[in-house]
Length: 69
Image (cartoon, rainbow, N blue to C red; front, side, top):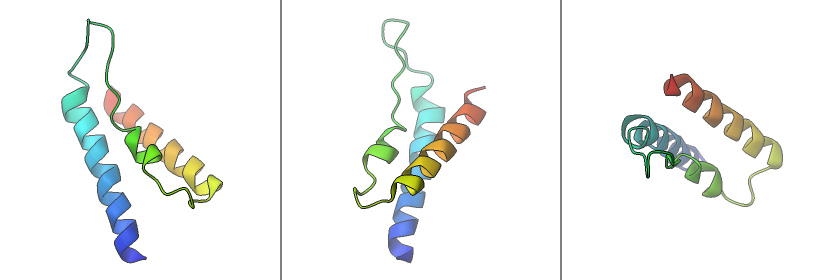
């Protein structure tokens, strides 16, 4: 259980850092910005309860919004 939680915690932190440090600077055609952090929600297991997925998605969006400024 701890191993699985640590795996997803590392994935959360690494995707947020990659998004903030690298992909915020990349723009395609001057308009499109790649959003790599969405992979965290996509790669969660299907057995994850809906409420947990919603809470994690909210926290992910909150952290990204804090770093976007």
